[in-house]
Length: 173
Image (tube, rainbow, N blue to C red; front, side, top):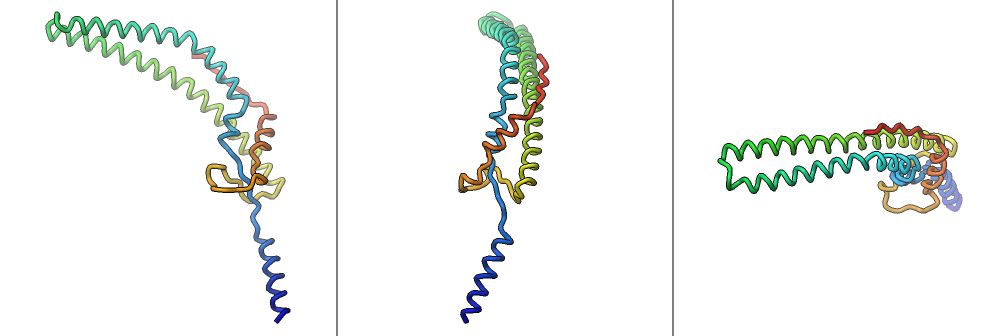
């Protein structure tokens, strides 16, 4: 009977170590956002936006004054003439909104391009890390409830990614 119990424990211990999974956790978003390349790109974007923001502010003020002018004309003009003024204003407003939309899309596209480059580098580093350390599974920190800090590799991956040179391709608007 004791041999059976001992045999059972030996099999249980052996089988659990054979089938154990080596898991690590990573705060993926933190690694992306803390990359220095983003800070450099954001600085470039802010510098490039200064002139354009002034132009947009001036255009917006002009549209606002035109809107106020139309409101004052509301009592004076005939309905057809007022309608023409409103259509003209709406056309200018739509053009302005399109300019702002294109302005924002331009910078969003550049941020997304850099983000894709950083993600690609992170995935390469993670792949190498998992191969070198026989890691079976790497989870994003948003996808688990509780873990030990000993399996969190965020800082390690951040350091390795920060050592990689990332080319920032910035296009002015």
